[in-house]
Length: 376
Image (cartoon, rainbow, N blue to C red):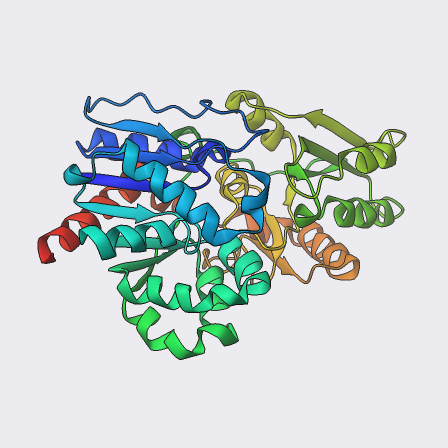
């Protein structure tokens, strides 16, 4: 099996590295086309392939005008891919986004008859369907020719199918769509916590980038209001984000509050686990979230979670593991109060973490790849 991954954000997310590593362990030959952008830590996401035929190919840096000139960007990347990758070896391609990667996979399919699957992510919904309606007919072509359409979470699938621009192709999408969750690092699957007691003071925890989508300012405002009623602390792990950065403003707010503990970025999983264990409630009121692996990390450490309704991880868990909210202060503060009052009702539920095991997820993808290639 020889797979081409067209991966627009390979250098910006560890998710792809983990999936490709597990696929490699299953013996799949992989050719990864990664897009380079200035300001990113390029070559920081290498995969130590066991399959010697596998390779990562890096595009030339995107230009500033490519943010606006989508078709020019696709031509630029398509030409680079054709020059670098042995197309005659490829049996199937996997586009990791509908628009930016799917457009390239579609062109490969039209010219070389290489079947492809496409994953729909929040950027497709929140950016392209919102601001690039001129590309909708291209999206229809990509969706129509895709052999499988993958959604990372139920909430993304629901949002996408209910978008008015998708109404003409809803039946088509439903006929070949599937939800395949992201996995988490093996560390969190293998090192679960059995924490059962709430601390005094109560410790809230936020893990994420300091940008508008993560809504840390909203959490801080709710925390400041609850401070007057509870013995409570807020622990924050994270830092500057690439988009919508709010770092300086947030640091100004929290620097003089002794009940807010800023840990900075933590890359060591053992240290991060210790922070989870020392806290009681995980709060990430993020909007426009594709999935949110930190929610799963928190659940692995037996923390109740607070998340935004109809977004990100909503719909993934059946058991009562936390509270969904509207992204406003009143809803968030109320959810924190509810969990504090009924704490043991949440932590007695333990979700099956095996479905977030990258090895199982990789086997699922391998099976899909084989089914599609065999039908070619």
